Amino acid sequence: MRGACAGWQTGGGLISIINGASACIFFVLGIWLAAASVPGSVFATWSDTVVLDGTPARNGSMTQRIAGVDIGLAELCGGERMSLPRVRFSLNGSVMGGSVFCTTTPTTYNSKALLSIVLWVSFAFQVWRVSYSTDSLDYSRVAPSESGHAGLSYYIYRPDFVRWLEYTVTSPLQIIVLCGTVYMCNAQQLLLISALQGGLTQCGYTLELCIYHLEIAANEGGKHSREFSRMSAKLLAVFAGAVYIHCVIWDCILSALATHSGNTRHCDYGMERLPPMIHSVVAVQCACFSLFGCVPVAQTVAIMLARPDSMYRVWGGAAVAYSLLSVVSKGALGVMFVMLVTDGSCINTGAGRACLY
Image (cartoon, rainbow, N blue to C red; front, side, top):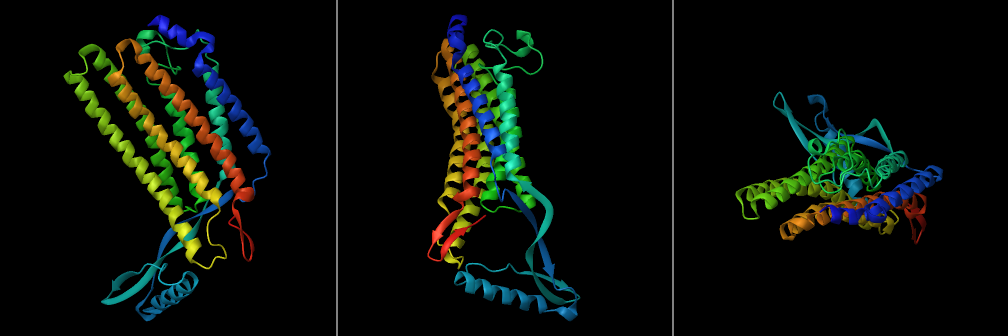
């Protein structure tokens, strides 16, 4: 085992090369983003507010106004594609109506600033990893208390808490930036989605712990033991919860994009479709975030198939996959966002050039 691990460390190891390259990429992107002129990177937020007829004397006035707005929406979007929702309540036996409107909130988000935080935080974590020489890296297969390591340490061949700490800090900010590109600007919705994303990353760490104990159960009791079955059930339960959270997040984002795209096609906006860059940004980020969930699946399958003396390769491969996905998702979002708000949000129409930002 030591010989195999030492072979992985030879020449700094692939993971050390990736860490060094990632640090350089995040540094360059951070400098480039700071120097780039990014107009329209600040977006305001709003919240839903129910407005009702205030007194019986005003009964019907709000309903009439809502009907007038619905007529205007029908003319704009051709039919009943959009209309204001109806809300009703009763006061002293008199039924009154109202609707839901949006009001601005004092909260604003600067997408450029959020992306800068993502890049520089990622750079700091990568520098911290690179600072571990190949001799001081923890390649051990034992628990921290047994290996003598105290505090945060960089682990390759077992669960790495620091990796998921980094993702907990950066991925919610990435989600907020992404939501802004598809006009998801409801303040409460942004908080909930970003919080879900932060919790999802901790599911990733929990999955690694389950995989680690699944490996131990396979080595000590065999792959048909009761302990192995018990850990497999726990792993499946955690993964199912993580998949559900992931689907909720991306259902919100993709639904908003689909609605926005449909309105652009059917409403008289002066443009027949959204700029392709918006779809590209969402597609790349959805693919990267989804692939993060594929890594523990592949890792679990490999653990079930691998021999005990080669399981270190499974953990090394997972570390490489996570590092590559991290730099691709963050780097692509930074580059594509700047392209989006500078020129990618524009499209040529029969009436001229139309831009969303």
